Length: 456
Ligand code: NAD
Ligand code: UGA
Image (cartoon, rainbow, N blue to C red; front, side):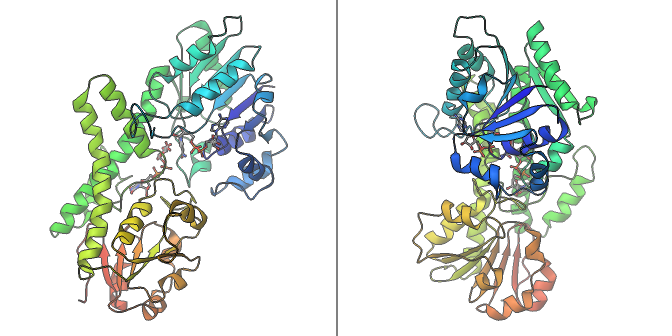
């Protein structure tokens, strides 16, 4: 029996440890966090994050071999393996502001581990970190000058929100980076043994620490690059007679390109793509690789452009003024099947609509509370949050679909059309609705990367 501690009970720490606890019933897993409210929610529900399938895994493991606590220091000494899964946001101050990762939570955790350990530990980087962070962590941990040994291993997480449990149960790969010493190799073997409880050996990849750290940043950069690439082509499609879905289909049939991550839309969001690319850009600049830095920066620039382009098209279509018009925003989460709104493109779109003096009504099946916090600075006169999509669209001049929730495909659009101002517009920012049917009902339909279906 091993004792595993995870510091950080967020979107990664909670689900990851729950799945490890499920498959390794002989091990005791403790998840610790400074946030008391979050820990209380993990202990007694409702769970602090919405993630399909998570409830069932928590029911099976909680208080069996999975425990949640705010007592971080008190659980360090008993742990054989410590996963660090704290947040690593983009720095907002000082050197590298707006680019580099803010490592303060992470360094504090390293010091806590050092100051509360009197036996050897394996420390696992689960958070996404700049390349060479493990070296810094090692320096802090080893600064005690005693016999206690800390082996730092990189084990980045590749789960996506909304499919976290599936991704953890059946990962494409598990990546483990360790030091090229006897102790380093032993630590890697220990982690491999943990994952082998349910992941086929051929999907467990071991490498050195730096390659592991860089592979995580590179994976997110490649995925985001595909989204920006297809979004850049959506602009070309709108200017010509091409259809972005047809282009994506033709591209995706080439097995060297593949069909995933080619959905054009209003741009990528979430807490990681932008942060991790900025991190990569900062790293390149640090090493004097300006051309490489500019290359990856382009992926973010295209993403910002896509959001502005979407609002610009709404504005032009609706007779060049949005002032005093009501826009029903369908979806605020950064993607479907999550309540997470961190860096959601909906935040930028709503702010730009409000700048144009539109009145905004937001509806979302899971993310309304987070949407309220994300737009807390907005005067309540100008924004309303409405659980019921029919109520949100009542009296609206336009609907903007910003999250591809399947629920939005099931709505009675005849009823919605009757309750809206005329001419009624739909801007399908995720290309998820039946656009021909909407047109037949009477809507003026504006998909992304396609010609509009318009009566005006
Ligand atoms: P999160 O903000 O949901 O959770 C981080 C948790 O760490 C918070 O609950 C916070 O209170 C806690 N914390 C911060 N400092 C602490 C400290 N000193 N001691 C104890 N707890 C502390 O973040 P997340 O989305 O789980 O992401 C965590 C890391 O995993 C990030 O580096 C992120 O880039 C990476 N990642 C995230 C995802 C994802 O889908 N969200 C996927 C893969 C990797
Ligand atoms: C992403 C990666 O997919 C995970 O592998 C990674 O572990 C994680 O980041 C992380 O490091 O945090 P996530 O951000 O949860 O996961 O969600 P994605 O499914 O990647 O979607 C990201 C954004 O891209 C969403 O806003 C989504 O709507 C958008 N997207 C995705 C598109 O606009 N088009 C697509 O074809 C795919």
